[in-house]
Image (cartoon, rainbow, N blue to C red; front, side, top):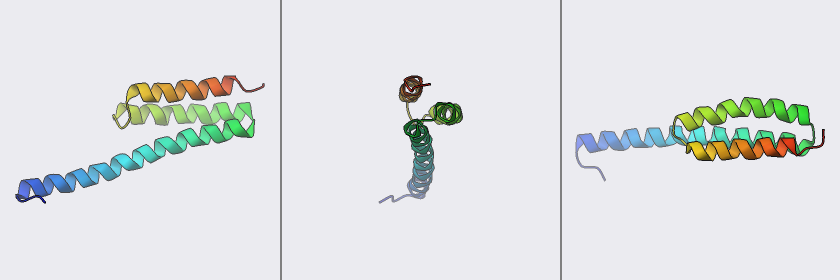
Length: 88
């Protein structure tokens, strides 16, 4: 347990930041799941629209360093490839 006032404050700030980061990470996962769901539904046009919306979410969260930029890029690449693999 933190003993000094400074350490107590840092512990409070860390808790608050961890909760905020968890929220953003959840938003990222939800965006990816929405694209996957659209792909599974089989509607290529809808999947592309959802993908475009999700790309901005993924990039925004990567810019804040919640996830590594390479992980964000990998997710976008795999989703894009899955959409391209769909029958037209």
